[in-house]
Length: 80
Image (cartoon, rainbow, N blue to C red; front, side):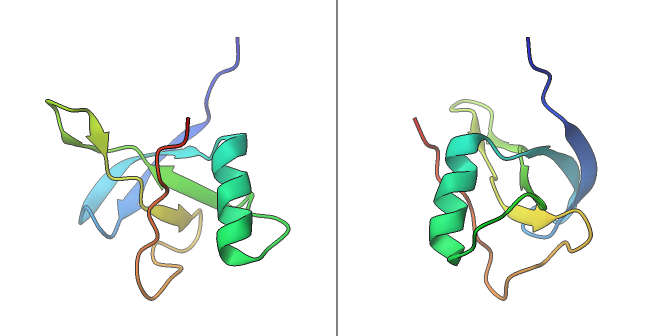
């Protein structure tokens, strides 16, 4: 069983401290293509649930040191 690494940190789209997790392999592959980079290991995704009825999460991306790494937020899509 693999445990997911998480951290509590500020999400600038939620406007408060929220739980974040590392990206999955599929999310990393998507972000590499999106940014045109070979590595994206420094990114975390906000898992704050915005709608309890649907379970929809914020999914805003940040790095461990930069709460706002992009001028406009990038939110990872839900990948199957």
